[in-house]
Length: 343
Ligand code: PMP
Image (cartoon, rainbow, N blue to C red; front, side, top):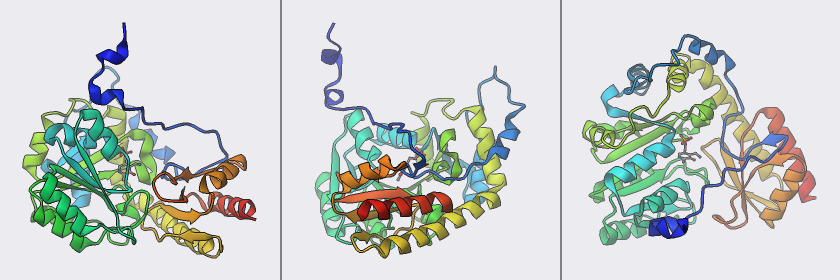
């Protein structure tokens, strides 16, 4: 039997998303938080293993809605926001439009589902190329536009006016992926929800200390939530994750302290990297920093040999590496090792 011949055509050309576990001393490659919250695990000791979780995750939605000043009926949960991207493209289809470079899963999932993708390069400041995007909207009539703001991997927020113009001029949906908004000075665009039915928002617990839970949020008009709910798997967020996620919202001040610490460290790492002559650093509103350096892939390898794992982004942005902000100690090690490697 030839499995390859049985595959749908669009799957034949795909390869699996590689999230390799590379052993290292300091792990700064995946935009995770360096801070753990072991005390939150205490809340799960009375969970019944034999019962399915609440399919509607009612308590978790209520807590999230309270924090974000929206309605519980405006929220749909995903097994990470990755799953929400999957659900959105399954529900509405393509073409799927996004700026490049950006988070790779928009394109990977659209292709897996067999939908057309359109990538429009960002401008020189890594902002949206509005005219080019508007032309693509007119020509291709995308059902979905994905905007990661702050953008992964460039770290900047897109201009709000440009985002608004896109929302205004498309007949499709604009998904504003706010995975990194907790680290941004702008604090998110969620209030747009009131005036625009086609503005959708994604948020996640993955960047603020809970990547292992896999909890992502779609926040949108009720009609959109109702539509996406038709394709959502019934028990997609497990009971342990729901319970811990409720604790996250109930104890947000604790999380907030770590977010502030990460932002302070980001600004320090930015200053320190900027003082190295052979590096060009891009300003960041996220929990990572993109920088340009000659021979980026070689520098990446040399850093790993010294125990520091960061991300080689040179296939997306010329000569660039992305470092996630860690604890002050981890950042010190990174700064020390990169200085050594560049000598
Ligand atoms: N959106 C962006 C912009 C991301 O960078 C990531 C994670 N790298 C995600 C979404 C996915 O987050 P989650 O862990 O919630 O699936």
